[in-house]
Amino acid sequence: MVSLAWHPDGRRLASGSQYSSAWIWDTILQKPVTLKADTNWLWAVAWNPAGTRLATGGDEGLIRLWDVENTAEVWRAKDPARGIRSLAWSPDGVHLASVGYNEQIRIWEARTGSLVATQTLGSGFWASVGWSADGKSIAVGGMGIHLFEFNDGKLVRGFLWETEQLRFVAWGPDGAELAAAGEDGTVRILDVARRKEIHTLLGHGAPVYSVAWSPDGSRLATAGWDATVRIWDATSGAELCLLAGFPAGVSVVTWSPDGRRLASCDLEGDIFIHNSTPGSPNRGASESHHTWVARSLPMLGNQPAKWYSLAEDRNMATGDADALNRLAWTLATSSLQDLRDGNGATAIATRAVELTHRQNPNHLDTLGAACAEAGVVEDAIRFQREAIALLQDEGKRRDFTRRLKLYQANTPYHERMD
Image (cartoon, rainbow, N blue to C red; front, side, top):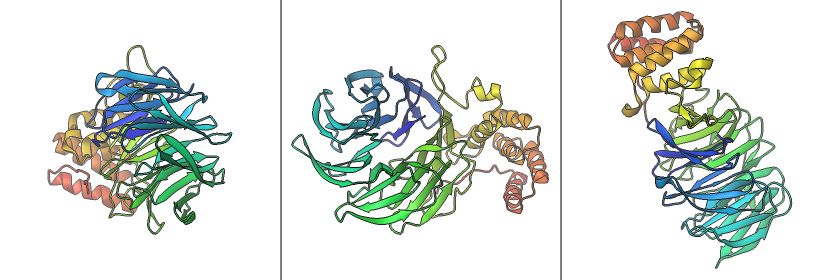
C-alpha cells in the first residue's frame, strides 16, 4: 500500500496500491471493496468530509471520484502532471486540491470535476497538499513549503519556506501550526502566523514521508523509512512512543477520527492498525503485535486483495510465519470481541509454530493465547510453558508467566483498549 485515508465513520479505511486498485477495508475483518482505478501507483486517496465520495490519484495524472456505496465512478479528470502525489478536500467538501510531478497546484470543483484555479509552484516534485480547518489557506510541500489563500475561487500566493528538505506537510487542527518533514529525517512544527519554527523533532534515522496530527492537536505521528512510527507531544516536542518492528520502511501514518487508533502502511504493502493510548508514553515501544494486518496483493484473475485471515492467503503457502503470528495474536487477544476467533487463531498460530519448528517463543505464546480463547485450557497451559522454557529475557518471562497464570485460572488473555 502507498496511501491511506480513514473514513469519517472511523470503521472503514481506504488504501491505494501499486496494483491499479484502491480498496475500502472494513476494520472488523470483512472482505475489502475493490475500486479498479486503471492507473498504477495510487499515491493519493481522500474521503470527502461527508464520507460519500472517495478521490483517487496516481501515476499518469489521472484523478477519479468514486461513489463508494455503488462502486461507481462519478467523474475523472486528467492533470498534466506525470503523477498525482497528494489530494485534499476543502473542509466544506466543495473543492479538491491536487499536486504531484508538475509545476502547479490545481483546484477542482468536486461536483463536476471542472478545473477552478491553478497556481505555479516551480519545477520539481510536490508531495503533499492540505487545507487549513477554516478552508481559507492551503499548504503545499515539496521543494519548500508554499502557502496560498483561497478566496472566491482564486488562489493567492502567500508565504514560502525555501527548503528542499520539507516535502510532507500537515495542518494542525486549529490552523495555527504546520508540521513538516522530509528527506533529512527531521520533523518541524511551524507557527504559521509568526513564520517561526516552534519545535525540531529528532529521532528518525531516515527520511520521514508522512506526518499526521491527532484530531485534538495534542500529538503528532510521524512515519519513517527507518521502519518506525513515532508519536510526539505537540506542545513540548517530546517523543511519547516508538512503534518499531515493521518489516520495511513506513510510508504513511494517519489517525482515526476519534484519535484512538493509528493506521500505517509499509513499503512491503502491509497495513497496520495500532491502538493509541494517550496516557501511556511507553506502550507500543518495540511492539510486534498490532490490531490487524492486511496486505496489498496484485489482482489474480477476479480475486482482489485478501485478508491474512483467509485460508488461501499466500502466507499460508509461502511460509510467512511472522505475518501469520501477527494475525493469530489479533484473532486470539483483541480487545474487540467481534475480532476474536479462537479456533481460527489456533489454526493460524499452529502453522506459524510449525514453520519455526517450535523454536520461536513468541509464536508458542500466541498459540497458547489462541488455545485459551478457544477454551482448550490444557493446550494453552502446555504451549505457554513450552514458550517460557525457551525464553532468556526476564521481562518477557514475567509477561509470559502472567498469561500462564491466567490460563491456569481458566481465563483467556485479552489486550486492553484504553
